View (tube, rainbow, N blue to C red):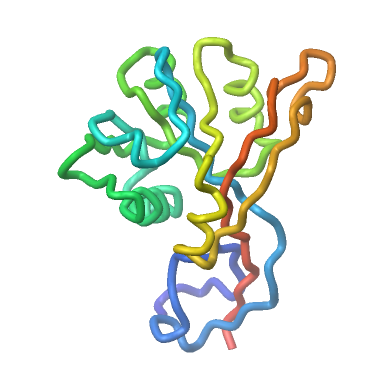
Length: 176
């Protein structure tokens, strides 16, 4: 209420109309996938596989952080059975590469240079959610997206197979 901001881009799932009755949505603009990258030899396909892992979940109070906690909790992953580390995107990617965390989550578009760099990095893998459709039924503001094999790099066929993701949309909000 004290802000002079009149227009903003916000991920779905961060609030509700009761909390901000003076805001109106002008519509959803684009998807911002929930990317889960991990290191090591174990293959993760379900969020519940992340129990016991050290997970970079975004800066405190950021959209990534809030949604990561909510999405992970839906699969039984929380601060009691995993270690959450609050890092921004670049620091999370660096921590993943350095082995300081085993998992890092990102909430951004596929054309983000950081995502492109991670997709081309052979020391990390991107999670393909085998329960993507089920997650979207449990958390209705999420959408099931498929990243086709080769979509990031046709010549190198990255990714090598279709990747199933979940994503909120980014909504344009205005004050009444």
